[in-house]
Every structure is written in C-alpha cells, then in structure tokens.
Image (cartoon, rainbow, N blue to C red; front, side, top):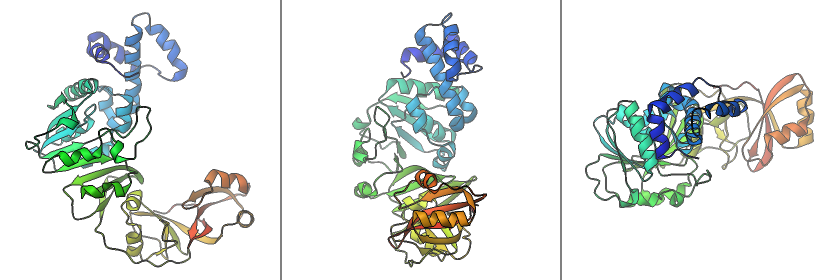
Amino acid sequence: MSLTLADITFLQSDEGIELLQNLAEQDLSQANLLTLITKLRESYTQAQIHAGVTTAQLRQQAIAKFADDAHYLFFTDDALQQASDPYIRHYRSQNVTGLRILDVCCGIGTDSIAFARAGAIVRGIDLDETRIAIANHNADKLNLDIEFAIADATQLSDLSEFDLIFFDPARRTADGKRIYDVQSYIPPLSLIQNWQVKRMMVKLSPGVTLEQLHPYDATVEFISMEGDLKEAILHLPKMDADYRATMIQSGQILHWDNDGEEADVDIAEPTGWLCEPDSSILRANLVQHLAQSLNGTMLDPTISYFCTQNHPESHWARAWKIREWMPFNLKKLRARLRQMDVGTLTVKKRGSPITPEELIRKLKLKGSQSATVILTRYDEMPIAIICDDILAV
C-alpha cells in the first residue's frame, strides 16, 4: 500500500511525529515487526501503524541516497527506487543558479530539491496529488521555496517563462517492471516534441534503445557512478556530440564525447592486459575510441573487451594481467587450472552463453591459488582467458 493524503495528514500531526520518532529507534526487521505492530495497536489504528511503519522503513532505506535528510522526508517505494544517486543529482544541478526550471513529473520532489539547493527557481508538477503533498512536505522540511502543483504534463502549452525543463517520465509499470520502449514511458517521450523551450533534460532508462532516440536530434549522456551505469539523460538542444560518456568516480567527474568519427583498431589475439571499459563508454559507443587512445587491439568487432601491451593508464578502463588464453574447452580449461593449482576462481563473461556460476560448478577446482577467467570471443571464436585475479585500475 502507498501513503494516502489522510496518512500524510496524520504523519504531520503531533501524534504522527511522535510515532515516527518512536519507530526511528526501533528494530524494524521482519523478525521483530509482528511484536512491534502488536504493541502499537494499543495506541494507534491499523492505518496509522501502516503509515508510520512504511515511512520509517523507507527512511532507513533512503539514508544511502539522502543521508541525514532521510530522517525528515516522506517517500514512496517506487519514487525512492527511481531517485537518482546523490552525486548525480548534484552533478545535474551544476550551473543552474538563477535559472527558472520546470520539473515535469516531479514525483516527491527530489530533483526539484536538488535544483533549488543549487540556486534555481523551481516549479514542480505531477498528476498524482499524493506525491505533490509529499513533495510540499519535503521542501518545507528542508526550508526550500519550491512551488509544487497538480498538473497534467500532456496539457502543457506556453513554457516561455522557463529556462529549463527537467522531465522524468515513469519508466516502470504498475507492477514494477522496467520500461525500455520510450513510447511506453508514462507519459511517452514523444510528448517533448510539443514543447518549445530553451533547454531540456530528460531522464531515460540507461538501457534505452539508441535507435528510438534518432527522431529527437539530441545528445544522449550516459552517467556511471563508481563503474556502475546509473542514468541516461537526453539533452536538447543537441550539444557537439551524439553521445557523451560521463564517469563519476571518487568525487571526480570525467567526460568523453562521441562526435561520430570512427576509430580504426586492429583485431588481435589477447596478450598483455585485458581491458574492460567503463559502462558509460560502452553505452556511448566509445569502446574502440578508448582502445585506440591506449594503443590497444580489439578481440572481436562485437565484443567490448580489448587488450593493451602495457598496463593502461586510464580512469576509463579496468584491466587484468593476462597469463594465457585458449579456445574454450571445458576439459582443457579444467586441466590447465588444476595444473596452476587454482581453487578460487572469479569468472567474467562477455559474448559467452555460459554463466559464471555454471562454469565454476563444472570445473570443480580445489587448488590453493586464485585466478580470474574471462569467457569471451576472439574473432568469432569462443575463448577463455586466464588472468591474475588482482584487479588493476
């Protein structure tokens, strides 16, 4: 169940505030929940208990994304899942001081809050009155002057008063399944073609099919955080590149733009160091550009691994020292790993149908050493590459 307007009114009351303060100090694990709820029934209704426990649990989950702010804010489960990483919210809010921003499909207001904290003048709209009530509560608790209103994104007309539209359509179905088709977003991405505005940023699924974005003549930015692909942003008007890779790592922000030029990289057998590009590089179609910049060679035109003779000095790639490689054969791989006295194995794969779990189970290794095996292809041939197990960055 989600919070209702009545739930929010209760949680904002003195009685609700006291309940939340009490729950903040309780063990909310599943094992203790029944005992806790039974005790709460002496003082609260079932609806009040549900609202309080749900909010307290979501606040605990939200600490990773909202730090100390989580103790004061209201959330919904789906809005919390869709909320961006705090570093990404901060990154997107750079250079917005004084801008008039319309946050379309603002939900519970987390992006609006990030923009307002960065000095923007923000208005947020959403069709869900409960989410707008939560957004108003959250902004009030953080002492931010943000205007939130119930409005239908499909009915927007004159947007001339705004410098920037930030659009965050729903990318999950009612039962929580991810939506990858941009025309199945809620509302659909094509809606932006009706909006006349100086600048626009649209949150997309990181796994979006790039061909679906061609009609928009925009730049697509893929953002990774500590190696994990977190977000995709459609930028209008188009920047100087079709795609941009952005990596946030250890507080450092790096960009690499794909300007459409082809990279010319040879195919060669694996030697030296096996390199895995950052996920943002992969999605921005920059793998061969990265390999070229590091004097590397590709294993296969369709595989994103590449090799360099020396350890790659780049934030954009992780690398493993290659010991040897062979055409994939389970019996021969098992025999070779046993000769190496390998018992602890890390398995990575790209372009191979075998799962790491399946391979480890079938190898049945018992040695005292460790290694990393990478299952992939070399010029269309399935291979196994045996590497040192220590990851070099």
